[in-house]
Length: 458
Image (cartoon, rainbow, N blue to C red; front, side, top):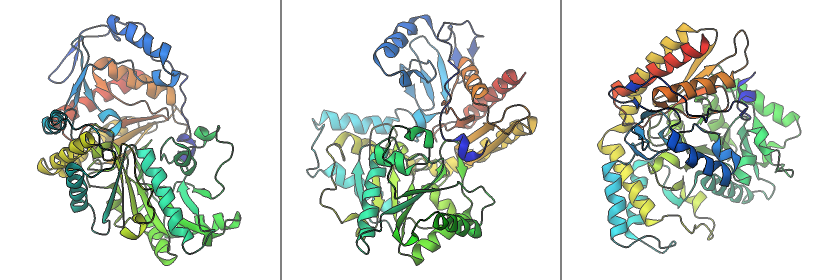
């Protein structure tokens, strides 16, 4: 199975156990499992969720969260997990950081919950803070609510830009396997083909190149472009590239040379480059933005998830001439005062606690331990990642195909031992704890994954 094939859809054939099961008790500095898993009293809750919500909402691990703090998740029964998910890469500054909670509470206590997009001081403070943090060529900030909304906005801005010089210049190039959101435009520009089965009328001006591996060169990029041209694509109608700064499902980074070739070709042809930093931004990879690893500039940047460390806020960052083009750029809940307060506090924590540097430093510790696991099973395991996002890619015994089911079993086993992971459905074990995690907790969590892999492989 190629990397592009592996990322096109989920295989949810394996069902997590929903019958309370006695598991070995755990009581360490950071983990505690003292009940059956799942606990008896969580079953009615799980049953109600399965009854009243879509089935898709019941595919994750059956851990009923009661509270979360820093890098730990607790249920009502005294069980405690090390969180290696960050709530799907959201709580970069940790769960319920005191400074973020204080900012939220002060805003609520000030009787300020909503103001549409009428001016507010907290929004002004946040956009100025963002402006001062981000690369100098990005001088405008547009606040929204979700990552997919940021993607949709960037598509709109890209096409407005392109049509200024040519009404037919609306083409956008992305990559197979990329995830840019679950709304219509975001799905179409994304490269997860199995998730598009319902769309029917696909946008004919969205194109996808194969994901280039680490050996890809500038020549690879130009060859990929030539293939598009040979398929009948008029390259003069391209207005933008949209790049997920790393492939989220597998923490896979592009080769620097390939991205530099994109940037150069875009400059030569007045094409903009959009980086999707929704999962990768705000310190996750050891830099403020993951695209900075490639030593290139972005024209637009889509932000979300880790920007706020908990509340729904996203943003599009860009150059003035790309942003100030449409009077309809506003959002009912964009710049919500509570979300702005939380985001401003999260960004301050990111700086005050030096979390970007800490992500890079802890990432080296994490990588060292993961290499040890890889070396135990060189024919079955590969690793990829930077900073505090890594993936363990697990292949079927004697095959190149990723083993989706055994990964589900591994993350279930890890849950039973007190480590919480995301179900990717792609044969990869994603590791992405809060940037605030302690070194010894990080190492303890990896040791649990190592133990779980050993038990599932035996």
